[in-house]
Image: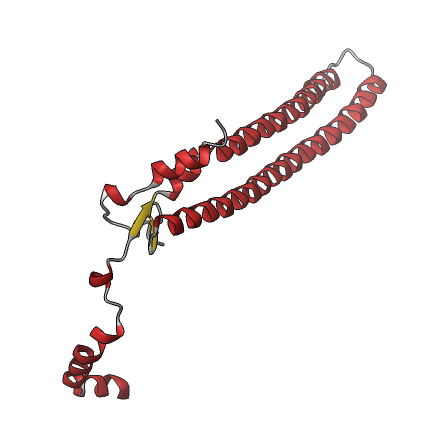
Length: 199
């Protein structure tokens, strides 16, 4: 409350202070001509040949995991079919009590086996998805660090004072950079430079 009152009372003094001090304290951007570059980092990352290789590797590993899951699902299906057959024979009145009792025990054992296999399958799927996500995140971090170094070197060489990422968004999903001249965007140049090694 005190500071707000002071600011309101001293408003003319603050304006005078700002008018006198700020022009000398800020660098004269107009005189020096700050060179600002713009980059679409999401596009550069997406079109980088190493990103595409990492994505192919991830897709291949996902396919391998899907095959493993499919094999386990086939075993589970066999067990369920076996249980279904045993259930039908348990209800068959033509069979002796002993045979039906033995099949009921067998069905119970097979049900426990199917439950264990199903739990194992769910855990395997969860664990494999987590492993693949962690692996991709590690690769992404390495690639982003690599891109940062290349962009920094390029910006230094080109004499940029500031480089903005036009794909960056705030917490509300709003783009940080709302407008820029296309001439300042060097994304295509960056992509060509990064992918030159792959050719």
